[in-house]
Length: 166
Image (cartoon, rainbow, N blue to C red; front, side):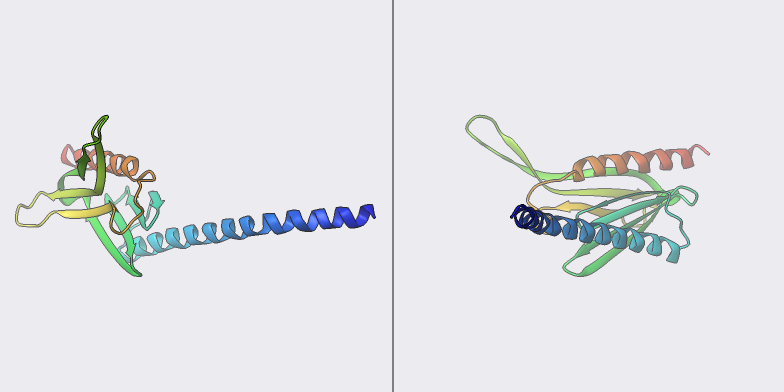
């Protein structure tokens, strides 16, 4: 009798735990695949990632030796890849596009889009824009994208400024 109750309890616990283990494994596999895609993209462009971040539908990496940023964003099964050579850039700035909702108690700022905009030294070239978040194609709420965008803006500007002063 006790063996049957114990066995039933173990089976119920396993049935509750297995879905979480499977989801965790799938998440790790997707993250590893996204990271591998970033490393492969950098290698195709003769780069070697030394710093990187992954989030929702995007990944970004920096090759500190060649001062190059590699960016991949997947939207509707379409992969957008961009390469930014920091030596050709004048500056990087964070573009935070949003709107203010007038609530009764206090106004609320809603972020609709976060982008990094790289201004080239050559005025004839167009700016390079990396889209970190867009409310239309991502979730309705930010999950760390603002902090990542600020981090990468600062990181890019540190490398750009170091190249200018060398």
